[in-house]
Length: 115
Image (cartoon, rainbow, N blue to C red; front, side, top):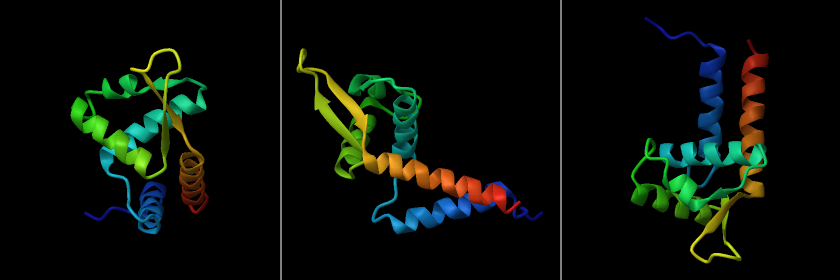
């Protein structure tokens, strides 16, 4: 049985193209974490590193902490120490993250338009 060239398949093809443009594509865990960060950002909610480390359905605490460091190194997030409690770090989306999600939205719109 063949999978038809549906809007979703076209969307996946566009995503693949975006991944090839980036010098290093995000892995699945990084994508899930960035989705969580982007949703919180879009809703105006502040996130702490601890909020993300507790996402055990995505991975272990050590794995998630490592992926956060990768996202920071890639420029998708910024980590800032809390001014009142040095043990806490705030996670904020960067302009690169906003641009990434704008590109994803454009891909989705293009895939749906070509239906």
